[in-house]
Image: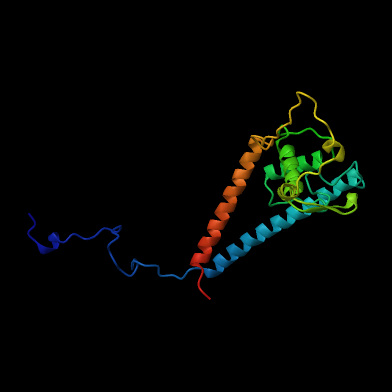
Length: 229
């Protein structure tokens, strides 16, 4: 058991972090070396700039050597194989993804094929396009320049006119004498219109209607929440 007061107080060691004196006040006593940091950042940016300039110059040299070895551009020696190279003077379209560029190359390649071309979708799109052209001719007014400017009318309007005026009657048909046993033919309304959409067309029409319905609903919502002027 200690008997003296000086034995009760232990002297702190040299590595005690809780001691505060002139040599270890507990905070940084020197300022940051701003000049050294500025020199380091300047050297870093300078190195990056020199690297990019070197790469740019090397790219120019390599492209010049390739163009010189390929010779002048002809129809057999194009600027590049990717789509749109001729219109952009051989510059790549950086924002286009790889699948998109592949599709453009495919379209550019197939556009040079002679007609008629094979259908790649079993004729679904070709049939839909044909029916769309038929709908334009049957359901809307149009002019036929090849027929001295004749005007086509919608088939629904033509049916109304025929129902009002009746079918033209031929004089020879009116004078025809029916023989014994002959029966007058009765015209019945058909069960269907004789026209059926393909499954692909039905899907396209349904998707178009859904898109139009969504667009109308979105426009109505925007008009509802729009501030009154």
